[in-house]
Image 1 (cartoon, rainbow, N blue to C red):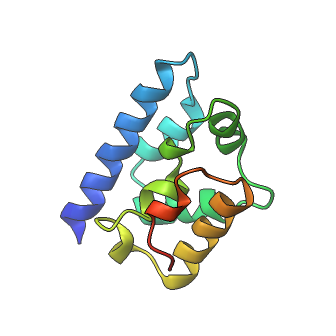
Image 2 (image 1 turned 135 degrees about the vertical axis):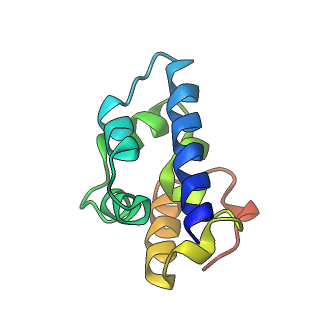
Length: 108
């Protein structure tokens, strides 16, 4: 599991770099990702934030919800790190914002 957590952390760093390509630099996100805090707990804070995060809103506005933690944790590779409730919360947010590739994701 620790290896998979490291891979998730690296995936988030790649996501940060991809965001910079469209002039969005989510520095607070990067700071959380590179901290010593458990990456699963970092993710949960973001997924369960009431009303969503400003970062999610920015990704929505730029039509890049594919870079959201909500989408990433629903990928088959990372699902086992999270509870059903975590995955359902992520799925619901993507559905609420009408993520256009939702049908490609497995429903929790």
